[in-house]
Length: 121
Image 1 (cartoon, rainbow, N blue to C red):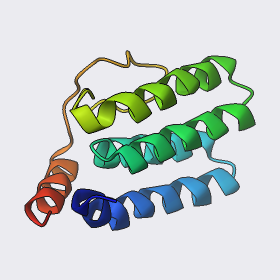
Image 2 (image 1 turned 180 degrees about the vertical axis):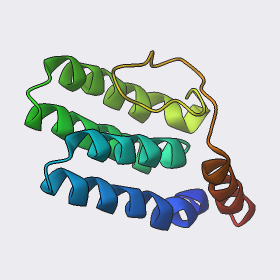
Image 3 (image 1 turned 90 degrees about the horizontal axis):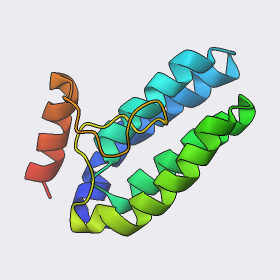
Image 4 (image 1 turned 180 degrees about the horizontal axis):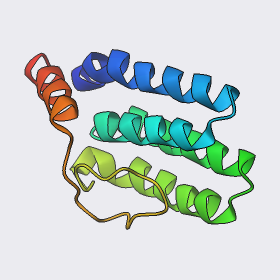
């Protein structure tokens, strides 16, 4: 695992924990928002990028959302193949509701966390 992956891990895990907790309470919409946050934070790490897309796919399965499931299968493959060669659109939230190649703005708080994780890498 890269140093960036290790440095960003606590922040991604925090978002994943929130996603799990809100999903368990029945708030599926908020759960997906936390998964999107985890995606933005971890998408420059192959490990985290693939893991978050996998969890998004599981979210889609639980929601019986075939569009999300199929979109995430496609994104899991893309994340596994292209993350290491910087082939990811920075800021993209990762859901099937957005183009997998669309660059999106990053929230300032997420940008600061990513910058800190890179500085310490």
